[in-house]
Amino acid sequence: MNYIVMECHSSYAILLDEEGRFLKAANLHYQVGQRVYDPVLMKEKKKKIFQPVRWVTGGAAVIAAGFLLVFGIHYYQNHLMSYSSIYLTINPEIRMSLNKQGKVLELTGTNQDGEALLEGYDGKGKDKVTVTDELIDRAIEMGFLAEGGQVSFSIDTPEEVLLQEYGEELEAEVKRHLKNRLSITIEIIDHHTGDRETSSTENPAGKEESGKQPAEETGQEQTPAAREEMPAAQTETPDPGLQPGNEASGPQTSQPQGSAVYEDTDYGTGSDGESDYSQPESQASREAEGDSGYEASSDYGDSGYEEEDD
Amino acid sequence: MKEERDIIRQVRAAREDMQAADELIRTYMPFIKAETAKFLRRSVTEGQDDELSIAMIAFHEAICGYSPARGGFLKYASMLIGSRLIDYHRKEQRHRKVISLETPLREEEDKSLGETLSDGKDHSEEMTVREATRKEIEELTAQMRDFGVSLTDVAENCPKQERTLEACRKALNYAKEHPELLEELLRTKRLPGTKLCKGSGVEKKTLERHRKYMVALLLIHTNGYEIIRGHIKQVMKGVTER
Image 1 (cartoon, each protein chain N blue to C red):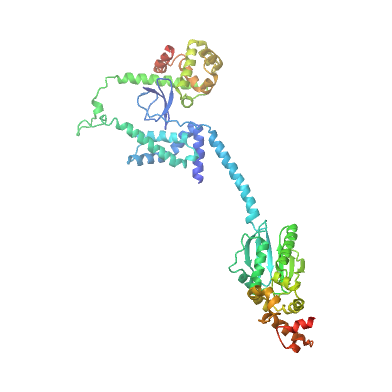
Image 2 (cartoon, helix red, strand yellow; image 1 turned 60 degrees about the horizontal axis):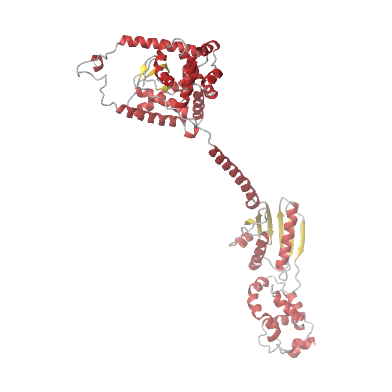
């Protein structure tokens, strides 16, 4: 095949082949009109054809990315972003950062006691009321919270409704949690306005049992002697120093014997007489009303109360 | 970064306009030379080394085939130049055993082998033919200019597929049989597309798409242009026979 050089440019030449094609080729020092035999033809790149599959997959990817982004943002705002805060103050001050769902994102101790209280505790992902309960338990255990103490919740939330809701929820929960254990004051504070609302936990029963309702109830129902004992116990408990110790030791001392102590041993054969009787005794002497029951009989263990009551 | 964007912009412009492409190639001549020299491991001289022409056409291909998805333009051009030069050298290797005409006849003599040979052709006659061809081409180019068509346009517009080429030839054949169509073409400076496709049975879309090529082909078959016509005559004969 031979070609006629039709046109020469510095970077290429146009050739006409014998079949009537006009072609671009490397200009190997050609001259117009020359016949050439072995040119280096330019390779034409095929024009990109429209590829629907690529467009479809690309479009799908874009849509998917968009969805992910939207849901991601939604998830972030609902679960990961700190939406409101509750400042729990007993003496330890703790800040709970909550997401929109009311789950705890972060716990920070804002004073030294707060840090101490949080040491070794992980409340992440738990609900605020659970964390509050657990923290109050810890506080009691560590001696920060005792009878007559105060727990205040300062709620910082952008929504008025949420403030109301959280306040009620926390108050109800703490009341429920501490019912018959401690009587404390609960204070709900609006972090923005500083509005306060206080209430206290009901604590009708004696506290020396510290939360052992079943034992207490049975005691209440049974004997008049037990009933007598109750008021004495109630006055006795508000000793803050005693409380944490009581809490810790209580379960061992009273639980196993609990009901048995009141029902049988003390009144019957009167064997142990250590815990139950020592308290009323001291109480009685403190009251100093000349209650002769003890003195007259001078015999601990059996007759003292029965005689009196009858 | 800005430089790269500039190049891409220039490349885009060059793809549309051959003039701009030539300009761009001239601007990047040092780069092309350097790439060629890197390949040959010696310096290159413009107008002497075929490799430089190959590199230039490769750069041209790079302009036409570049898309930003291929990375930086100069990297792409460099790669293309390299592979075209390799292609060229492989092709050349087949002719290795042929002695170069430039080989000195004897070591002490200045004369080269080529100068002692008579090629059996009349050089002056060849030069005359070449000159005549050149004149025809010039004339054709001038005439095409009236239609707003350049040879470069035609080369770009030329059908790539054999089937399309065949269709164009069929249309041309019909025009040759009906010289009034060629006259109409010259008179109106427009391609008588409707008549051509009706007469030849070629799809109008095909003719429209290759309008520039058809203009050139038909012009070549008007009066004059004997040499060019002679060059492509055999093929046209083939079409008529079929």
